[in-house]
Amino acid sequence: MTLYDSETDGTLGKPIPLGQAARTHALIIGVSHYRHLPGGSGTPNPEFDLEQPTCSSIAAVAFARWVIDEMNNPRAPLGSVELLTSPSTDFFVSPTLKRHTLDATMVNVEAAFERWMVRANSNPNNVALFYFCGHGLMRADLNLLLSDFAAKSLKPFDTAVNITKTYEGMARCAARTQCYFLDCCQQATWIMSQQTYEPGKALADPKFGVYHTGDAPKFLATAPSLPAFGVRNGMTVFTTVLLDCLRRRGTRRRADSKWVVTTAALSEALGAAIPTELPVLGGLQIHPTDGYHNGKSGLHELSCAPEIEVSLQCEPHAANALANFHMHASMPPHKPAYDYPVAGPWHFRASANHYLAAASFPEGQYDKAEFEVWVLPPGPMSQILEIK
Image (tube, rainbow, N blue to C red; front, side, top):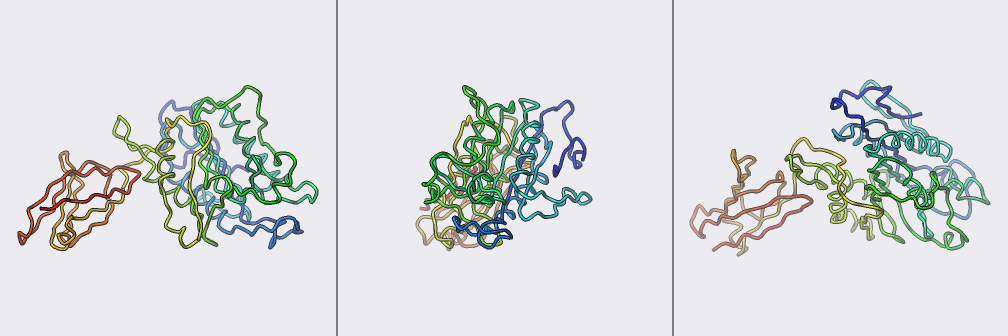
């Protein structure tokens, strides 16, 4: 069952521009419970000793929450959401509309994928979003493991999605903007080295001579051969960073002055992000972008300028303790403005803009210093103020 369909459930109170036929269609999968892995509810497959990733369904639900509650794309308003989680859970599409998510088995995922593909294929201006969080294993191709993975002892990968081939097969889809968010490991384990061919099932078979010609980036949680991390019973590192980038850091100012998340800006912001959790989790995680990618597509329009981290300090360092700091937008009405009558260095968030700033010294120990500050995503912005 589809979680949300604007054709039958309405627009959830969000206005749709008159005559706008294009829609955004999302397929979201999160697997925290694997029946045939240790700790699962089914017969364990002794060939695989992967842990139960308790954060995966939490991350998938959080991404679905952003898509339904926050995503704003006037050029392709939300059309539908397919949400599959293991374990299944109740999800409030709106305060008065509760749906139960489907279990992320191969049968359910195949059916949801077909519904998603048909909708996305209905208009070349549609936006197709694919999100997966759970276990991933790779040989040359990347396989996404579904909740009934390894159900067949002789053919364990019958219930894994070969996303590499599926992505190639999605070149047949008319939607010119397709985004794939893959929050999973890409480790090449011993068991994968024993496979004599690329395992896993393509949900859409590639066609010879048919290639992606639009914008179809794959945003990856980590690089090939590396793991991806999450907090037990909490959020994953990648989805935490992804949502932050979608809300503010992965934006560009369009010619009409609107701040928009584009695929290029999102790729840059994800690549620049260094999550603070990693020293605690004890590993390396980068966020590369792969696939056919022209970077021009808009995914989300903000209602106001994004807030970006700013770090300012005086040189010489002794001047920090004596300075008052003021910063305001350079253009009338000179808003927003920030005043810090306390000792520096100063660390705060400011709306993206061009600012005029000053460090003054009430006791006259140094001359007043005036300077320009550009605050732009993805940030953070750091500047040293030369004081005389």
